[in-house]
Image 1 (spheres, rainbow over the protein chains, first blue to last red):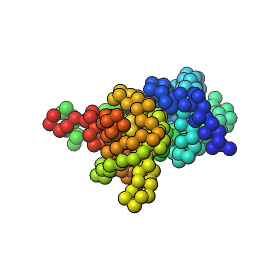
Image 2: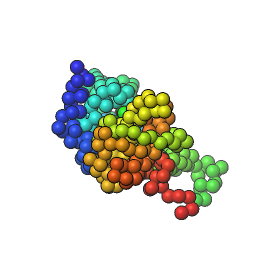
Image 3: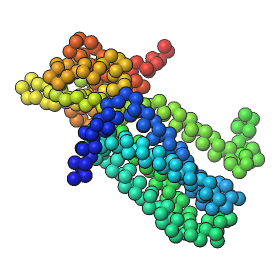
Amino acid sequence: MLEHFCQWLYDSAIGTGIRESIWVFPIIETVHVLTITLLVGTVAIFDLRLLGVVLKNEPVSRVASQILPLTWAGFAVMFVSGFLLFWSEAAKSYANPAFRIKLLLLALVGLNPLIFHFTIFQSVSEWNGRVVTPLRARLAAASSLTLWACIICAGRAIAYFQK
Amino acid sequence: MEAFYDLSTPESLVMEGITMKTKISLGSFLLAVLLTIPLLAHHSFSAEFDGTKPIQLKGTVTRIDWANPHVYFYIDIKGADGKVENWGCETAGPGGLLRRGWKRDSLKVGDEVTVNGYRAKDGSKLADARHITLPDGRRIFGGTPGDGGPDDPSAKKPGA
């Protein structure tokens, strides 16, 4: 079922067009890699603030309101460019172990801010100015940094398992 | 530069909370990363193929995957015992091949080709096609420039 869907995407006009293009594929690929800086770079700034490493004197909520819109913009570009790359390689990606691990990690890294925002971040006013934030916030930050690093590695590894 | 050598003096080790030692480690790490980048063109030759295992494949094309990031084509090879084996050949992407005059229709199913390449490390029936002799007699480099494999035209020869 899922495999058929991947094959259908792969065989579609858009998928084939990207796969066989001279410029479109490398351009999308380059955008996807460059935007890591916008997405993961801003995620790292916020995570490092939660860990008390950078912007120590800035209230957490202020860092969040300035940084997170950029994170979302980065995420949008990553999602679209990543999906286009997948579209062109879907049938190969389906069986690719690195791609499967990456999707799994992406699901986990998506769960992390969801839990963070609906639990410990609700009480941010109580610890907004603290250099070192509550343990749950620091755990969220540490797992976010670790997961994103693993996602980039898994993404890079896709090329080595693509047959 | 003096502080660099004077590592025994504790004050010289501390710069705005970051020790000189940390700075040196970070610097070396960055340098190592920068030196590694040219090896990761897309994926390096040596990640998948063994430069000590050259192979010549002569056979009939059965399939062509004109695709990014690497074009693959498959050929049927008849062994001495009459048994036919299907081999995969990896080359550069469509853009790289087009720049060398290898068009999409330069190779068709049913064509006879000769491939000089290197076997995959995992021992599968896959080769990096370094040179392909097309049906019209042209011999074209099939590798990805900068992949560090044999005959890489972008690699500078030592002393050259």
